[in-house]
Image (cartoon, rainbow, N blue to C red):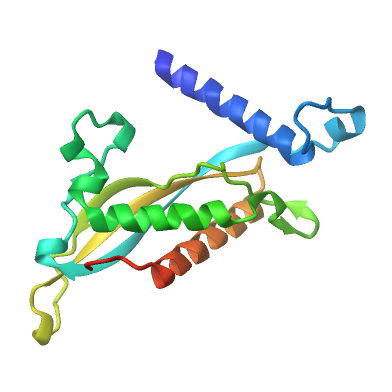
Length: 185
């Protein structure tokens, strides 16, 4: 419960800091009254989505729930060791997210999303789709469902901004998959 409160306080501080930076590019200067009245209140929105991954059985990621790497004491439990392919996909996706000019993502002159500069998608779980029937010429192919989460900052109580942000993240993921070079896969 104490760590939950600390996480909430850290999130609020990060949101306030990011909100301040969104309106005040020079963090050392003070916010004047005009900026305070037009200030956007940002909330963290965890956009969770699932994608399917076709591989052969030997290269398929292990199924089950995944724990963030910073909480894994043993190297063998870290994503890079458990599934090099998923690690490479998420690293490339992170790189693509970092290239988004998130502070300038605007619709009708209003900002609708921001990403933390060190935004790293979080892998939640991998499930195998046992109903998948592979093509006859690739009978060792399996389909995995991979669930990930991306933390996005959106203006409070702004559902259209959430939908726009989800669309941007989906498009960025599609581009990351299309342009990625996943050696050995």
